[in-house]
Image: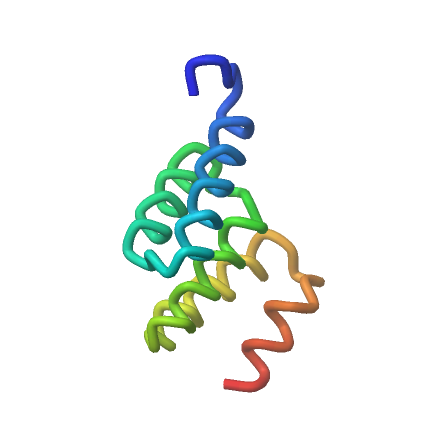
Length: 88
């Protein structure tokens, strides 16, 4: 993290760690890292989508919906968020 000179790079690093945690079935740790990523870059659509998926995986539909809505706030044309919200 010390070598990452921008918040976007640090965010990407945290997202990568979150994805690794998810892949080994550590959802709480994945969520913690996703939240760290969003603190570094709250405009990261990839991280908001990832967090929404984590919420869906953990049966937290209200939280997932809020994350998808945040994606649409950042990118009103995002097809993934639109599809997910229209199916809920």
